[in-house]
Length: 210
Image (cartoon, rainbow, N blue to C red; front, side, top):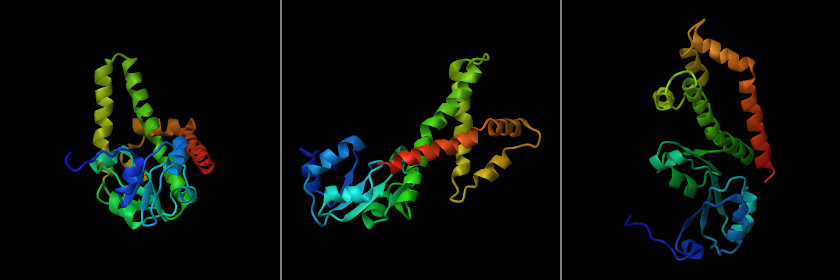
C-alpha cells in the first residue's frame, strides 16, 4: 500500500506519530513501552488486554491522552463497533472510521466488555459440535459443516439493527411445543446458560487481577 511506511524500530513509529496505537501481548507490554520515549502531546490508544489506564500512564508519560480499546477482527471489514475507554477524541476518531466506536463509562464496565469479547472461540466450538454431531449420524463432514455455517450466517442478518433484542429473536424462532423450544429448554435444564455466566465471571476476575 503506497500510504504505508515501515519504520526501522518502535521508537521511530512513536517519533513520527501523533496518535500511537499500542498492540502488544500483556506479558511484553511493560518491557516494550518502558524502552520508548513519548511526548506530552502524544495520544495513545491501547489494545492491550487487562492493562489499566493507570498502568499505561506510568509507561507512556509524559503523554496523558490515553484510551483503551478492544478492536476485534470484524474491524478489518468495518463490521463491528470498537469499545473504547475513555472515549477520547483520538480513540473515537480512529474507530469511527472503522465500523464505529462504543464509549464505555468506566473501567470495570470496560473489563466486562473485554470478557464478553472472549466468547468467540466458544461460539465456533458450539457450531462445530453441531456439525460433528451430524457427521456422526450419516451426514458427510463437508456438507454438515456447510449446512451449519450457512444456517447461522443467514441468521446473523437479524442482528443488524442497533436495538437487537436477543430474547425476542429467540422467541421468534420458537414454535410452541416445537424442536427449537425443546432444545433451548434442555440446554437451560443442563445449566448451559448459567455456565456461560460463570465463565464470564471467571474471565472478569482474571482481568481484574491484572
